[in-house]
Image (tube, rainbow, N blue to C red):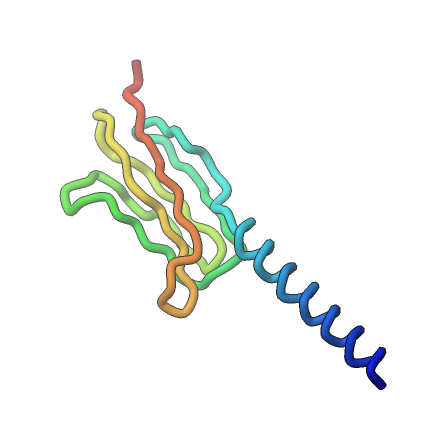
Length: 104
């Protein structure tokens, strides 16, 4: 029975370590640098809520959004940046800074 307990503890430790590694590997996939007036798709299989921190006057349009994918477009011809975040149950699980480059 002591051997069984040791094995059970080891399995629990490995599962906890794997969960921590999985949490660190959550990323939003998509471009880091985008151009104005073009549509971009970002994906993240984790979480259930997208948040965008772009300022109230940012010319950012959300074209479509699901739990795992968001399509956006920057509608003006000037540069800027915004932060795209993914949340799960009200807690931020990952974020990505997107830079909008000028056309030139």
